[in-house]
Length: 318
Image 1 (cartoon, one colour):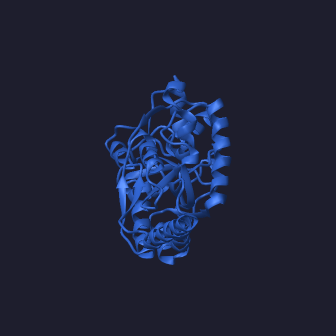
Image 2 (cartoon, rainbow, N blue to C red):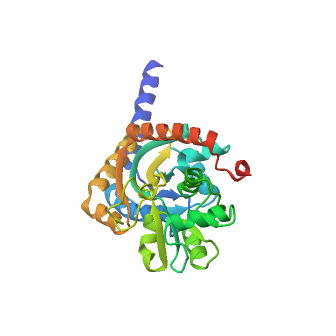
Image 3 (cartoon, helix red, strand yellow):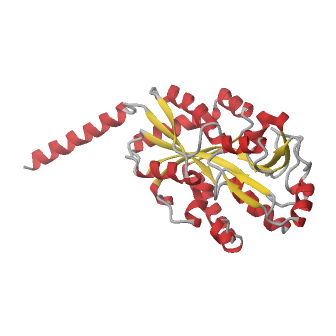
């Protein structure tokens, strides 16, 4: 009997090793919780091509928009931890969503692989807008509290949090209008349906002829947009970016996790990928595993404190 048990254990181990070695044995689904066309989606689609080359299999981007990215994150959290479903995250939503609501996922549901890039938050208006600076917007908002429409890509996203921080710093009140992604928000801005759009630099720089970027959330002026003043230099202390990383379901096999980590590290160092990110007006910000999780934990603490003093949910804002 003992011999049989040992043989069974060896067989199981061999099967597990074979399965890990064969991975991926079907297309990998890279989940994006926002609509096609936004900054997160563009990054995901570029990454998918590089991942496929390094992993020797197909990587397919799957858009699952809704609830400010929650639906996509929940899908990844509930997927089988075999490496065939991974997700592109967007911080702060990754940490702010569980603060503001009861989400379908929690922080412990994921294997944290790496953050890849960041895309500074920004305020933009249509080219014909009367606003030419943050000072113009602030002055008008003080005379019309709650009347000036501000579009974001969803409650709890960096675009929305940027508005909350802006309001707190300036004492004004804007009328928040959430959208399901950057594409619909850009369309609304061009059509005059919102006065101001909270879009990342990488989402508006390709259409510079149609917008005026009032300010960016980098600590200083981003090298990708040196002519765009920061919020801080205009007297508004708001520093915020959309940080995009990759997670997998909790319980990922060590061999698969190691291969994904190696692939992501190689991609982050690849001059071609870095060139593509620059062409998409997206800054590199590679940080792996435990170090990334530690930074997320620190951000969670900061946003929890913000929630106590300036809650951003629409119910709390009433």
